[in-house]
Image (cartoon, rainbow, N blue to C red; front, side, top):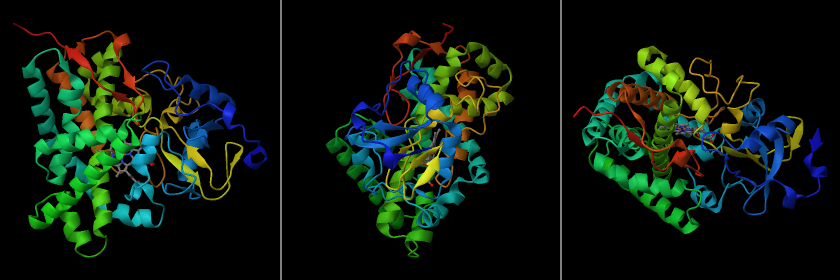
Length: 410
Ligand code: HEM
């Protein structure tokens, strides 16, 4: 066991975080090296500070389940991956950045909208959106950019439906969210995008007060804001967060999932022939891709021991889900995509009290989009060589574009 308080400050010689990917298709090789030798080890951040990088599956779950770690971005030891992340997250007031018991009280206000049952009742809506979007892409004819025409469209239109937002407004929050999530945005750009998004969410709340409808936002106004259970700023922060959390993650997962399936043609053929395999394949794609790649982050509020290391109170902790999901102790032969594997214990949606609230919705969208896309366009193929595909260094694992084509009968 190593007590960090006895380790001299060696920030200058520590590996830097975030670490670059060597190939678009796998997390940084450094994760595997560290996991074998020191699954909890120190890294250097952009601001000269250090944090603990956790790369083992058991260790990541132990940290995320530990009540002695905090998600509060305002805590002085909370680690931010880049200046852009610091600008995006320092002012966060939604429950993702709160600890129990306040976290649970706020999360409970929205859990009923995302239960498996409630989301399953949305299946016809999501299917209809996917049919429309993919039908239009087919009409456009090949080649198309799958990111723009399909991957961004389905989650954004679904969120618009849930929140009672006219579909044409999706571009407003898509663009702002993109700026907030890009690791190389300037802090000023991020602050402006955040202010725009909060302004948009405040306006949406006001619109639903004036003209209530069946949407989640209207219900939150009626049941939470008007009863005094939540104040206006908190509700606006939650609405902003839900708008963001619900579409960029899923959009990138759609695009990267299609890419992986096209790269694994045998498994894709099997899925086309046996659509009942899609739910298991979706879990494996979630594990393999781990779209939420360089976080979550936490800060210890007391000394804790993880993986034989003592993390001192006040120190930052980074738990990249992409590292945990490629741990061979939890997933044999972890760097191989295998749609038949038992992958449901992956941590692509994190673990512990902050585990993704929207996972039933994400699962529904992914299943519907993949199945519909490959049924409607069975000959779908990449329109460029795989070595020209760029996975961006982004809060999420992200594709800027995915040019695809398919045979057309003329
Ligand atoms: C939290 C991943 C889609 C809403 C999280 C967290 C992860 C995650 C890893 C935990 C963050 C942390 O521990 O700090 C994903 C992935 C998605 C996805 C990979 C798609 C493939 C969605 C959708 C929604 C959503 C569709 C719904 C609108 C949320 C919310 C939280 C959250 C509200 C905060 C939960 C809390 O703090 O209690 N998500 N998410 N997510 N996600 Fe998702």
